[in-house]
Each structure stands twice: as C-alpha cells, then as structure tokens.
Length: 466
Ligand code: SAH
Ligand code: SF4
Ligand code: F3S
Image 1: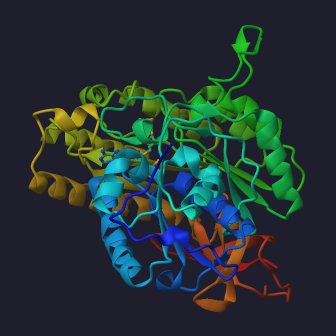
Image 2: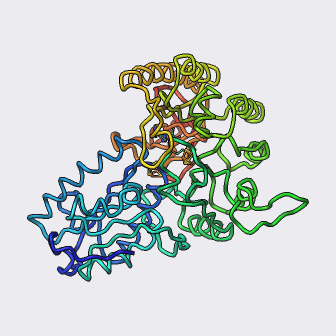
Image 3: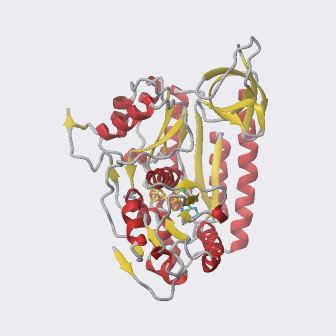
C-alpha cells in the first residue's frame, strides 16, 4: 500500500464525509467487474452513502475499469477527464479508479490524473472501506499489490433481486499471449465450496432464483484448493462444485461462465445434462479456427478438440445454446487462417459470438511480435466475421418460433410497463405480457411457460400459456 500526500492535488479528503453523501459507480468490462461493483456498492451503502441520481451530482464517483482492449482503456480516460475538471470546482468530490486499468497503470494513473483519490486493483474490492478511511485522512491511496482476496463478509448491493453473480474462482493462471487478464487479476484463488454454498443459501433466503457462477477460467476451479482425492481423482473440481451446490432450496437456475476448451470435461457436460437446475447454455470461447494461431495464442487445445466438445454437448443436450468469443487479425493471421475461423462459425451454428479485432496489450508477449496486421485488415475481417455471425445466429434463433420456453421473469420491461422480461434457460432475453390469456398475473421471480411468437436477433417475444 502506498499512501501519499501530493501537494499538487486538491485536498478532497480533508473535507469529512457527511451522511448525505451520495455515490455513483460506472462499471466497464466483464461480469467479474459487475460482481465487484455490486460488492463495492454494498460497502458504500453500509458506510452510509446513498446512490446518486446522476453521475454529475455524486459526491463520490467510482469507475470500475476494464483494459481487455485498448478502446476499453481509452474510454476510462475520457470519463476521468470530465470528473477531474468537476473536482476543480467541487473539491469535496472523491474520485476512485478501481478494476483492471487501476491494476495495470497503478501509480502512473495518479500521475496522469492527480485529482484521483484512490487507485485500487480488483483484488482490493472488498477492502474499499479501509481504503476510503485512508482517503478521509487526507491521503492519496494506491492499492495494487498482490493480495489474498478476503472472503466476502460484506453484503453486496445487487442490481437484480432475482439473479445474482457468485464468484467461485478469482484470477487466471493461463498465459494466453494476447491477454492482459492474468497480469491484472492475479493468480487463481478458488473459494472454498462451503463458503460458496453458504453465499448461495443466503441468496435463496433473500428470494433469489438464479445464480451465475463466475470465473475467468471456471474449469480451473479447485486446482489451488487442498487436494482431496478419491479413487485417484481430485474431489474439488468445478463439476464436484455443481453437484455440491445443486440442491440449495429456492434456487431454480444455475449458470456459469467462462469455460475453457483446454480443461472442459465430458464429466461436466454429463453433470449439466443430469442436474436439472443447470441451464442449457455454454459459453466456450474458441478464439481462432486455426491450430497454428491457437498455438501462438498458447490456448492449449486444437480446433478438433473444440469441435469434439461441441459434438458431445449436442449429443447429450441437443437444444443447448452455445456462445463463444473470437479474435480476428491476431499477429501473423493469414487470409486462409481467418477463413478457418469463418468455417467454424458456419459449422457450429452459435447462438451468439462476441467478436473482436486483436488489440496489443501491455505486458503481453504478442504485443511485441513484429508480425502485427494493419488496422485496415482488422476492420475488414471483423466486418466479414460479424456479418456471418449475424446470419448464422438468425438461422439458429428461428428454432424458437412457436416453441414453448420456460422463462424466469426478472423485471418489468422498462419500455412497456404491461410486459415482463426474463430469459429462457438457454439465456435468450424474452418479453411477454404480465397477464396471461387465462387471467393469471405474473411478477418478477415467476417461472412462466411462454409460447414464442416473435424472433429477433437478440430477443424473443411471446404469450404465456396460461
Ligand atoms: N477467460 C476467457 C476470456 C476473458 S477475456 C477465456 O479464456 O476465453 C474476454 C474475451 O476478450 C476473450 O475471450 C477474447 O476473445 C477477448 N480478448 C482478450 N484479449 C484480447 C485482445 N488483446 N485483443 C482482442 N480481444 C481480446
Ligand atoms: Fe485471458 Fe486466457 Fe486467462 Fe482467458 S484463459 S482470462 S483469455 S489468459
Ligand atoms: Fe476487462 Fe478486467 Fe474483465 S480487463 S474483461 S474487466 S477481467
């Protein structure tokens, strides 16, 4: 921990927090950041802060940042510029940068934007209160050292009252040559199964119906826990965890992300097909359809292995939805290699694919390779890929038409108060009227059988059966 008093910056912190103070959190990036933000909001509310109506009137502004690609990182600086300016006229404003840019840039961020009060890496999210106390003592605080993530003793202020994120493993021990995550999220730290189950039981008591178990590489779960073996097999795998938490009463649905093709097992697919609450949706990034590119990405699998996984899923759970992440224009990628990625998209028929052009990241090996591709090639390949993804996803989506899907209502549709919105087990956003044809009135938390009438690229609409 570095705590400094720099004379160049306005002395925010010497103005003590008043009970009327409000906070604003903007979250960038992935589900891990969303989960961290909910925990940090919980800490702030326990400290007496309340949520501000707008960012510009908040007394404390926290950016939970992402640096997966350059454009994600740059976005943060433009947001910060605005707040730094505001601080010149509102010196009581507390400005906090958390998350992955905070970890990556550390002290450089404090130098670049001296108005910032606190820079804190993702491993410090649960320590927000302690860090803020130091800010209140007039210090500018930097918390980016490698830390053991303390079991979460705080109550998260969750955005939903129906669905909740549950971290099961933090960090990542892989070394994909393009990826900044291991350097900003640190080493793998699995939570104990008992702690995870206790959190889920608590959520069930609060009325939550769905949980999503989170990890950057969820299949790595347990490999850092004390090795308990039974008949020569490790007992703390992710599949074991699914079995262990499955019967928590009140929880109706279990999801998880992200799966890694290198560690994904047949045993896991089998468990998903047998455990009734585990939803039929798999997010398994493949990144490239070419084995040579996969090798230079250090992904540790071949595309043949990936296709075998898909085949096994389709055999055991035919209606499962499958989504993936793909990178185009990785250093050295030839047109033929790119074509192989397109072929995988055609062959698998994904429900959804997150696509991105390769972006060189600090402290990653691939960023220093000489065979970087020009911007124009990146744009061209990304457009071609996106067009194909849209086409195949549309075809795949059409299977929902006239089907009856089980939808967990999550909320009122903000654009139409007479409708509820929720998701199918396969993770499709679905809208339907609050009142069924037989006069039943539905509310968030209900599981409703909905006949799908309309299919769009990203959502469905239908009518409840009853
Ligand atoms: N842990 C997950 C991915 C986390 S990052 C996995 O192993 O698949 C989310 C996605 O961002 C990645 O799947 C990848 O497709 C993309 N991504 C990561 N680094 C990138 C980079 N340098 N340039 C472009 N896309 C990147
Ligand atoms: Fe990044 Fe690879 Fe870890 Fe995923 S598995 S977070 S892509 S290093
Ligand atoms: Fe971004 Fe950090 Fe997630 S870099 S994708 S917020 S782990």
